[in-house]
Image 1 (cartoon, one colour):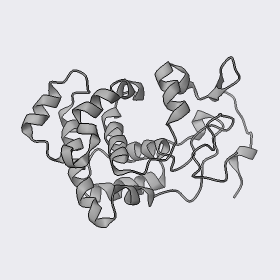
Image 2 (cartoon, rainbow, N blue to C red; image 1 turned 90 degrees about the vertical axis):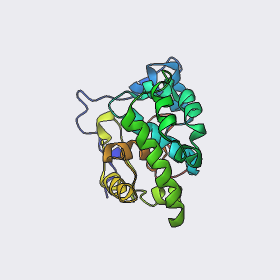
Image 3 (cartoon, helix red, strand yellow; image 1 turned 60 degrees about the vertical axis):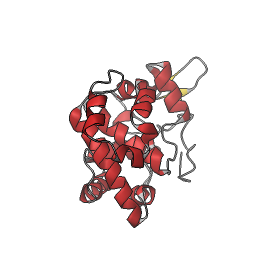
Image 4 (spheres, rainbow, N blue to C red; image 1 turned 30 degrees about the horizontal axis):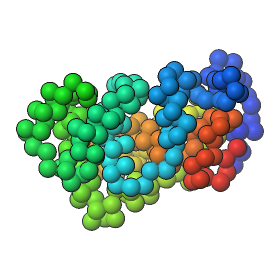
Length: 212
């Protein structure tokens, strides 16, 4: 299969890396604030395999729907407090009183459907332990081939594997797990390397050997 990295093509109007004063390249979204830069430099695209970590990412990706990731990231610490450190057992025990408490918490994103989805997904996560657990389930959808993006436009918004993961999660009772959300999750936890070629973060996850 041809490696897209070796095919320069027409780059007119495409969005590439932004280089800082030290010559370090990052995608434009990671240069808009110190918070996003830190997230990109230390966390985005690195493997997440523990249950609580994956439940957190899945929940936050759901809350991000229709909003910017920066909005979610700014509230992340407050989300962790509000959702008991994203312990699925604790969140699954939330009832109507906890839902109302969360809806009255100005430090998080107050959306009833998303809050109820998080509680529902905590219960689904617990049930999934009977089939090997959330980590084994999600990572079983790892793509066979990596990405080789030179520009932001080279990164798809979803993929066949994301569609398959979305369908499978819904079958297991999860909600707010559409293909776009699942694709964003797969990017964020390193199931494929979505770092642009030339970025200082390219190939740092250790998941893929065929990085450029």
